[in-house]
Image (cartoon, rainbow over all chains, first blue to last red; front, side, top):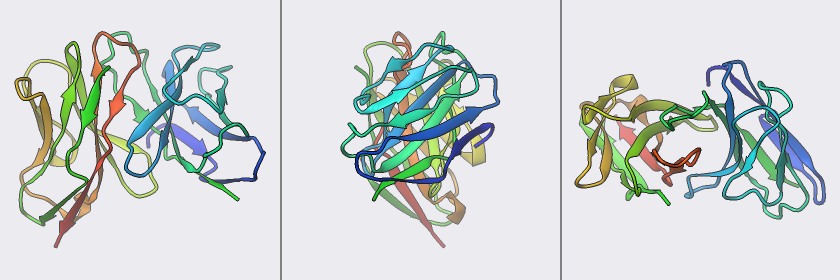
Length: 115
Length: 114
C-alpha cells in the first residue's frame, strides 16, 4: 500500500452523523482520489483533486465533501445527506496526470458501517 | 464515455495451470489500460499497464497482459497459477483524451485450488 495511509480501518456512523475519513500520502503526488467500492460494482469515483485547494466531483459526489488544504492530505467527509454510506472507501494518489498514463496508487481502505 | 467489462465474476483454476482473467474495453480514443489486484480488506495493488508499444505487457508477480486493439481486449494471464494468486482482480481504462476519468471493471474473483 506504499506511502498512502488511511484511517481509521473501520468506522461506524450513527444516523444523521457526519464522519470524516483520513487519507495521507508521502509520495509527493499532486493528484489524489476517493473511490467507493461496493460488492459487484467495482470502484466508483467520488472526488478527485489535482492540486492543493482545488477538487472536482466524480460520478457519485452527492452526500460527500472533501478538502485539499495540504498536498499530503485529502480527507473525505460522509455527510448525513448520504443515505447509503455503508461501503469500502479507497483513497489513491498519482503524479499529476498530464497525459493520463500515470498509475494510481491506493491506500489500504476504510470500511464504513452504519449503526 | 469509456467503459470496462470483466465478463466473468469468478474464475477457478488448479495450481500450476495457466490462468486468464478477461477484460474488454470501450473508449472513443486510444486507451490506457491497467490491471490491479485486491486482497481481502486491502487496497488495490498495481500489477501492470499498457500505454503504447509492445502489445504484450509484463508486470508484477509473473503476470502479463496482451493488448488486442481489434478485439478491444486486455486479458490478464499467468503461465502457472499459485494458490497465493487467489484474489480480486480489476481491469481499468482511461481515454487518453480525458483527464482523470479512470473507469474500473466490476472485478473478477480468482480462486486457485491446490
